[in-house]
Image 1 (cartoon, one colour):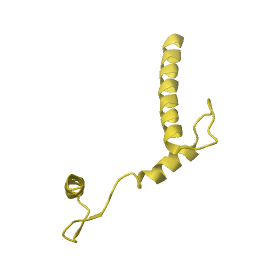
Image 2: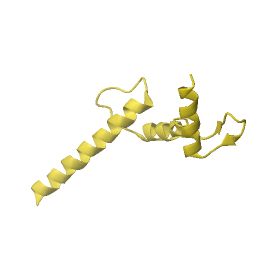
Image 3: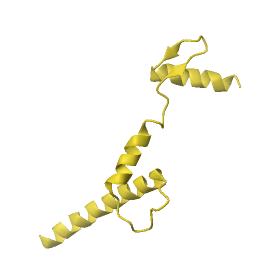
Image 4: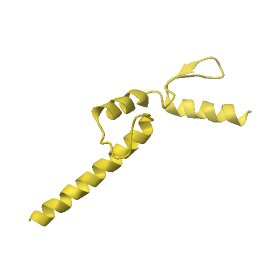
Length: 83
């Protein structure tokens, strides 16, 4: 029973460290050092920056505005195709 508990603890710790490493990389915090454990800071920073990673509204070529993701993608495709 003790070995099983240790195994699951190691698995959970490993998953936690992978998640922590990803958050540290994405946060681009300068003071983050190797081996430092994650904190609420990284998760809050990532949550805050999440909204700036994608386009939520776009003005189309016909001067109308859309918030529909499919229309935004189509307009982006059309724009770059015409470059």
